[in-house]
Length: 215
Image 1 (tube, helix red, strand yellow):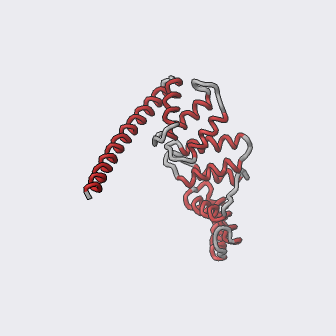
Image 2 (tube, rainbow, N blue to C red):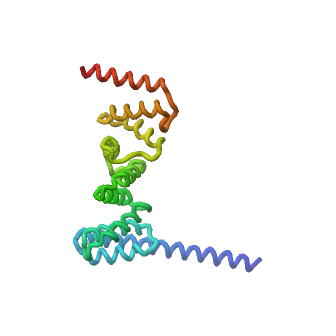
Image 3 (tube, helix red, strand yellow):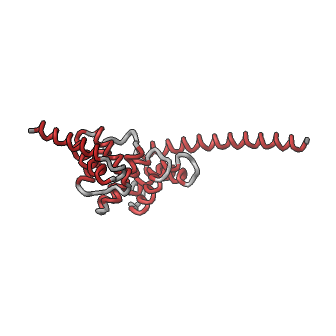
């Protein structure tokens, strides 16, 4: 009984020490990250590289934020030789993990695939951004709609396609007609939704009325 009590006390103290140690490490990595960002902003790329590299190899919550900055340095040759492959790999890691720059990394990857004429892959990254709904990125619905209209991407999931057109129809006036035409097709053929002739009739009627108003 006494041994059990002693073990419990020891374990409690051990947890307390570990918790304190983790807090100290967290504070140190936060300071190191801020130092790295300041160095990056002031063009001291050697210092920023050293700071971000240390964080990137840790288990800190700043790990993937640091990798984003490292990607930018490799992409632009800031403080080291340019390395497209390293930049690509780092942006890919950031895009798939918890980071405040997750969606910025996805945009970079989308633009990268666009430059290689792999428009479907780029479309899928833009679609990820759309479903993630980041507050700092606007107009993604317009971008996706424009790409679908121009044949620069297609939905691989019928239900997601239907939901996208429904959202576009109600929230983006510029693409209301485009969205309505696609919704008519969805309801007619049962794409991502059950066939519904009543809704087809309603939407087609609405389209005709809009044409009459224009005349």
